[in-house]
Image 1 (cartoon, helix red, strand yellow):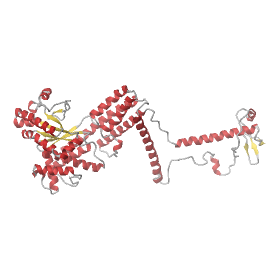
Image 2 (cartoon, one colour; image 1 turned 120 degrees about the horizontal axis):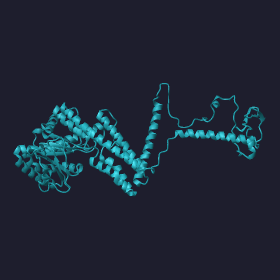
Image 3 (cartoon, one colour; image 1 turned 135 degrees about the vertical axis):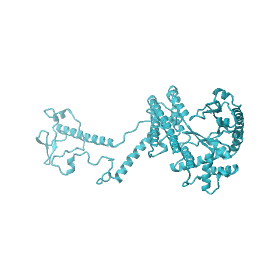
Length: 531
């Protein structure tokens, strides 16, 4: 139960770390949007802004179309069929309501369709004597006309002043009707979007902020254990995805003679993303090599392949190499395992779900053979295949670096030959070059070696092991990082850090090669990079 809680805490800590990093980035992006209000930009940024606007228009049209289809196929009320928004003005909508009732009891206003005569000086006589409006002439059924004051008269010829006033008023009424129709039609049309030339930086950064907000909300749902729909295109999973639009804005500002703005808040944000990624800190996972052998024992026994731990090193390497090259998963989904094995498998599943963006490395305690490293690589690969099948897409980020920890004097003396054997396997070396930029990390332990052989002997064996490991990596053109598990008391390798660095063997610390110092007795780790 406690071990299950440990995995749960590991996952929650990683998610909370990601949430905090995303929240800090959202604040910075919001400030940048306020600051970068200029219009001048590069062609690449302008095209990206255009694409964002077009995508927003397309998404809005899809929503409207979806709402119309849903209204037609699934009415909201039982007695209501085919609900949809109007797409055009109905016919005769500009006519009075009484026009739909057939013959009206009121006189009809005849709208002329012939020549329009402009209002002249004589037409002023058509204005009523009280000054409040024209004497409207409405034609009745007997051929006479009725004025607005109630008197009747015969319709005058077209050229008269009263006829001109009547035509003018009728034309105005017709124009008002057309204006009403046009105004209603505009209500049915979507509001045209802004041009990309108007504040393109704000458009691009606005999409970045929207994705960050969605990512933060997704992390909140995961922390609460609630179901959520996941579309990787709507979220940021890696720091490279976030850096891409930021670097584009940076280059655009420099090309537009705005380098002062580019080197300010924007450059600071780019440095933070490059340094911390999508998390504020990365965690290391650590497990003993014997636990992995026990898990493989259960799997190979279930598959009637024998007992893994009873095989010799060559047979183990042959089996592991063959499975690593294959594309099918090794662990059956319906296998029943004990609590110890389940803890190991669940750990790899959590690592596959979080990926290298949240986790840094997988450390193998008491490593003694090359098969110890390949066993972890195989279990990691199998877990990623299982998680990928559940998600229906590749796992987020990359695989974790597998770090063998040589602790006892015997293991320290054989460290160089183990690394040579490991790097001589083509598939593993190709994996290191492709997924970890040709970089192999190796950890050496000070506490157990000191308890095993004494402080003086352990220091000498550690010195020789480092020389051998560095030489082995150089033979295969692989870069190496030495992770020193030291700290605390003298027996655990404690002491002044600068003296520890100066006492390293030649070649183990050089420009371009990092040197890591870990606190093995504490639940944290820090690194010192020498470059």
